[in-house]
Amino acid sequence: PEITEILNSGVKVKALIHITGDGLLNLNRIERKDLGFIIDFLPEPHPIFSLIQRLGRVDDEEMFKVFNMGIGFCIIFAEKEIEKCKDIFKKYGVESYKLGHIVKDEEGKVR
Image (cartoon, rainbow, N blue to C red):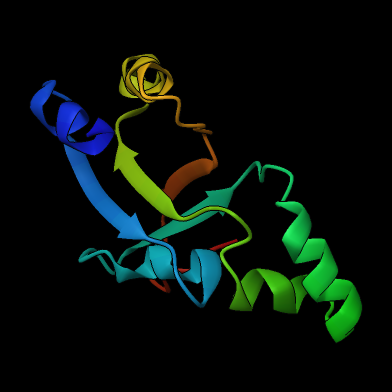
């Protein structure tokens, strides 16, 4: 319901991205191939990921490439809409974070 409310709230959503295997590299699924992503913040991963990492002897880089690390969905919209969207998520008891920002990048990298 929170996504529907955001879509109906007047926020101009530029992309909705389901973060599955390949983690945040899924951000590259957007239609615009001339944009890249700078990740400025990552929330603390859920404890299950530490267990997988320890038992599987998996390094940090591989963990973030293979798993979503608890970030299951990303919404791209203008920065001026952050508070409005955060309020909607809070209303539904959903944690939300500003992970980063978009930059012009012909290679479409996520960094």
